[in-house]
Image (tube, rainbow, N blue to C red; front, top):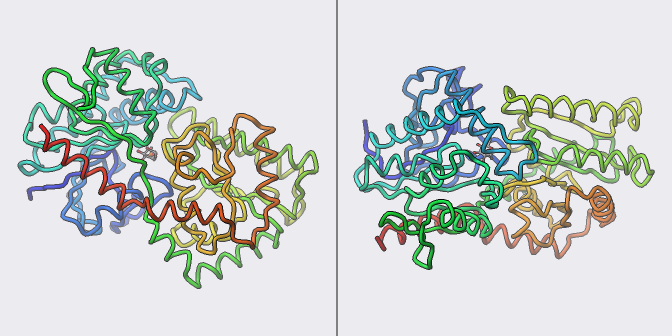
Length: 465
Ligand code: G6P
């Protein structure tokens, strides 16, 4: 086993499962995903990624992908059901997203969460070089930092939470709240997307664990952990280069022609998740068509909804509801050969995605709660022409940075409708100062800057101990 000095530990390995089963190993690049975010930071670095290969049972050794060494952690069917689908995605995920769907609690899921976190920690402890930087990712693995430190106090351990960290009133509902907080405090630095999350965490550790919080960090049992907000971003230069290609510009024009050359194209690209506000958005669109404020075929909506977590009941039900509503809208407002909503539930490749961004006059990103939302940043980066409008939920982390967007409260259907109409009224061929400001923001704060600032802060946190 080769020693590793930068180790990323995440629930999944960043490989494309469908391709891997045919023997082709490539980096999994799904819009807004964690693998997508970390790709530019890690490629061709002497890094190791520890994670699950997306199938139950043992995984044979994997080849390096884009220069990164991959180490699989084995999960059984029970682990997948009780850890990934259960505790991670049916307890923590809904609770961390404002409980827009109720969080479900089962004691057996907690046991699986501990067991699986221990397995990731053990595997990491085996492969990390002495003094290595270990960067643990996201809500699936909150216990790993403390479990790892117990075995390997020499390591420099970072933890980054990609999703929101909820206010104390919500977090306090978790039966095992103290253990979850202690698990995270095994890290030297805990990174969040937004400063509000840092405050929520600090309040909770003081209240639940009696930890001391001051300007040095959080002190518990004689150890100090630092915290900070590090808003994650995208590879802005890569998206700009892609979106500038002639092939993409032609494809964007062809897409518009395929859509029937509408005057306005609205685009949404989401994982099919109840946090994304897809139903609220469809409702607003339906009402605008019903009120006659929007008309088909002058305006069309393209909704890309990428399915996932399909064995979790809430996701199955959501998919049924969304697809029924799309069918209803098309039944009521489409015509033969002219759809009101073009609905696609497939993963797009990066080139097609860039073409879609360039074809869209208004990009509607209206989640009910979102840690960041990288699709919003990708759209801005793709608009190398300076045109286009971004409709953005106030409840996406990205809203703190993209303040020139058309900001909306997605729960306010009237406000959503009015703001969508306002965004559609802007001249789509006219570059706007708002887009220019947002473009400057995503250029200055790209994924490289994010990784640099996090890893520098981690070094500083470790140096001070
Ligand atoms: C969110 C999470 C990521 C996760 C992604 C896809 O962005 O923060 O950790 O990778 O969703 O979810 P999935 O369950 O399909 O891995």
